[in-house]
Length: 149
Image (tube, rainbow, N blue to C red; front, top):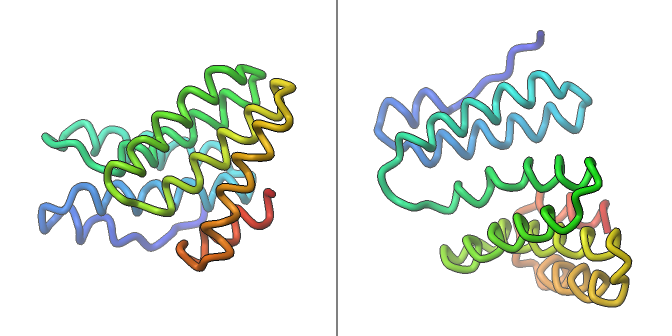
């Protein structure tokens, strides 16, 4: 197994659990895209366990819904994927996190298309692309949405 440097321990040591959770999330995403689902699941599990120690709501709760959305979509549970993505989008909006909001809306669109509601789905994908073309997103999220569109 390849080791990945992580700033998560630094954040944990300084009491910044949400930042540590976000690091673990992105490491999991990286591994998932490389096809290492075991490693990805390990990082997502670690992120979830860390998040459970956080006493207040945070945007990272929404980020950790995204692996569930992808799993639900892959299992053909499109309505569940749409609902989970909607919850993530609500968290993105509440915490004013453009990356999370755009990723979640994009996933809502993909779920709607797979449900056969193509027009609705395309509208949601277009909404996510507006954030891309407006330059509102981080480079990695811009790439993820642009490639998957």
